[in-house]
Image (cartoon, helix red, strand yellow):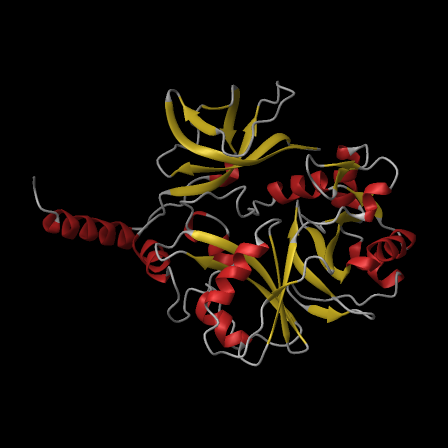
Length: 369
């Protein structure tokens, strides 16, 4: 278990149930607005961190994951997936390469399993993966004033998404894709012993403390899924935004590639990730994994459910492709509707014809009872 963060001792800090970081500091909606309009400092030090030094690290990770990594430039990062042989998502990694070492930060509690997998795949290669969560912590600065805060604190300001710059005293700062309605995000990896001091410097430079709930609300608005929360054991990359952020469709062979390529080339995936609007009448939000119902029929499952400062109660959900845009849905007793921006992608004539040919071939090769 991750060591409780020193920011839990700050005034108003409320920890997650069995959690090690603050979910809010007494005013979740105000903290969301800080991320949307100013600059909020979010403690995400519950994420697991792995370090992968070694001369073969990039070609090795290239062969194991969905991302093109063998020529990843120093001072850059990327997102990547580890897939099962059937193409199901087993891990989501945010990677950073700096000074001859690759770092991976992953969902809380998943680091040990990932390290076990990596150790099993080392063979005779020059790589030394290690779980270093006890020594390193991730902080996130989000909001349109984030760059101003970094500059005022005398810290480097990465330009493009996934650009990485070194921090004095160890660690790095990395720009990530925006969340919410375009709020900038920069991650800072710092020694765990320096979390309080780094936070104080950023707060003195103009940031405000914001809990994990605020970050999650804007993440949901941006349709950015979390592994293990917005995904399940059946999730394939094609069903989520990971197909564009964490998969390189033109790279060579990797485990699970056949499924990804087949679904991409021949038709729509079985499910799609959508933003659901819930009626918000209940004080109790549905838990991740709660079924999405259309009448008596189960047509999906929700992941993250949040109270958004502008949108009300919203959730990320994986729903079947057959669910119509205007379907009347229920989630845990709450009425729900798919966001108008999340209509299913139309299949063009070429793809439709290819799908019909595949169906015909399958019909001809499946023996009749």
